[in-house]
Image (cartoon, rainbow over all chains, first blue to last red; front, side, top):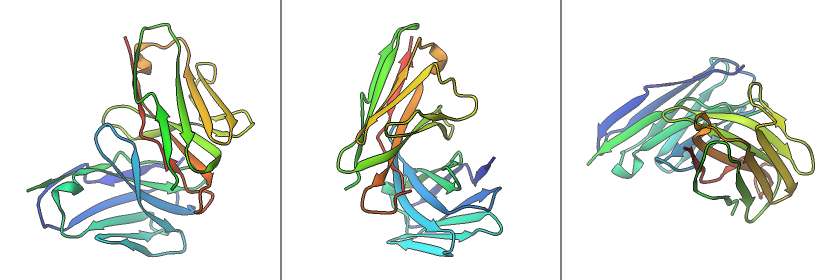
Length: 109
Length: 118
């Protein structure tokens, strides 16, 4: 059974600071890994999808890395803004998506 | 593109009654739909996977007689919580994958349904 851990559980930073969100998973036999954003009481918005053959994926201020062999992924958010405040979930995909508990980010103006 | 809707967005029902939640893919054909449950401050847990026209596959520990899933068409799946109890109160989220223009395995998530059982 895939176990996903996200550290830290919560993070509060001033606007403009760079964010580093960590995700680890126990079973490295994955096809891909996704990072999602969830606003309070809302569904999920997909941010990035990294294939198992890729080392990283970028979209705007977001960059995600994947080290499949060690079971780790990191999401970097550059120059954070108050609008980035949300819970960020990582989800490796083997035969299904398995979610971590998320990192709740607060960006202070 | 690849929009998934859920209805209702929130529902309150009395203990012992049944409630149905709909999940629709609005602009693509969803060959597979997934139902997740999320308790406060916890992560999403997959409840079941359904393919159009087939019986749903339930995850271990999920009561198939309590959570009835129907995927009768390529754009609609329903989750019926039968004889609901307060412990069924949760946030239910569906997702869909299929012919959405991207990889067939990519899941697109609905906005969720908040169920409160009193």
